[in-house]
Image (cartoon, rainbow, N blue to C red; front, side, top):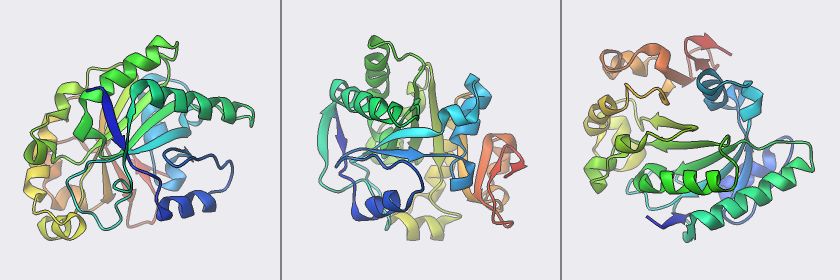
Length: 246
């Protein structure tokens, strides 16, 4: 896979960027995002746990929204005016953002493939190779799966996880069949729950759930250890990472 379709930043995303406190860097097809458990993203803690360094070293993410998703989520931000890019061009963009951030005292160590990144999973290794060829072996690649890629596109993302400095997070798009259908327009909750089993042994994978009670009620406690799950919204209104509340 030589090209990847990237969505233009939509109105909702631009509004969210403008509301962010701190550095605001963005173009039509990429933006800088300050991550962390306090804003609902525990990936810096996960990266720190697996690869070393401090969580704050992974706080700033260069983000693109990969297009071509086959779901129909109401708050989708990855289907607006998609444009195809090569890995070379994307790394050029990353370096431009990284250099601009450095002048403002910020180091960007994470390249985040948001949106429907697992639908183009063969591109992950192409992008990793391009980063490595430019001396950026330590830059983290972060991607995500919705657990429906095999069913809807005959793609097997779990076969693409053997990549250094790479982390994959899984997002289950619903609490049950009815909620999944409401969120995505697709009746694929049982498919998504069953595809989880292909990822649970990978050390660079973790599962994100919206509510702490999803884990048991969806029957996921029999598939994946609780310490591999991050609850982004809990009954305490906080974020939980590997059993720890923030």
